[in-house]
Amino acid sequence: MILNFSKSSYSSGGDNCVQVAHATPAFRTSSYSSSGDNCVEVADLPTGAAVRDSKHPDLGFLPFAASEWAAFARVLRGDAL
Image 1: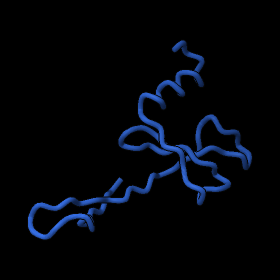
Image 2 (image 1 turned 180 degrees about the vertical axis):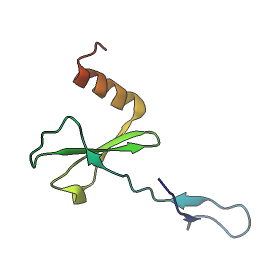
Image 3 (image 1 turned 135 degrees about the vertical axis):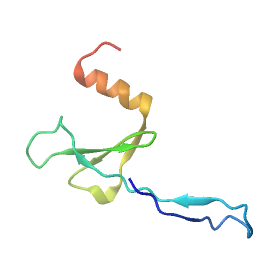
Image 4 (image 1 turned 90 degrees about the vertical axis):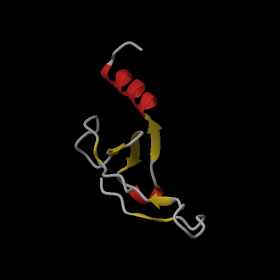
């Protein structure tokens, strides 16, 4: 994921400023989705993962912390918590 940083509008002039970047997650169809039109898409995030509905990607996504995503994946695999 390539990030393009720009100076935050909340930073004052000079050398001490905060820069921000908008990250656009790269979504892929989940391996747990069927091959039909009802798919769940997932994306890796620096701090975990994100999930969205493939039919309505414009409605946004749900981000999950790495620990939450790992627990969810264990349940899907049938592993004990």
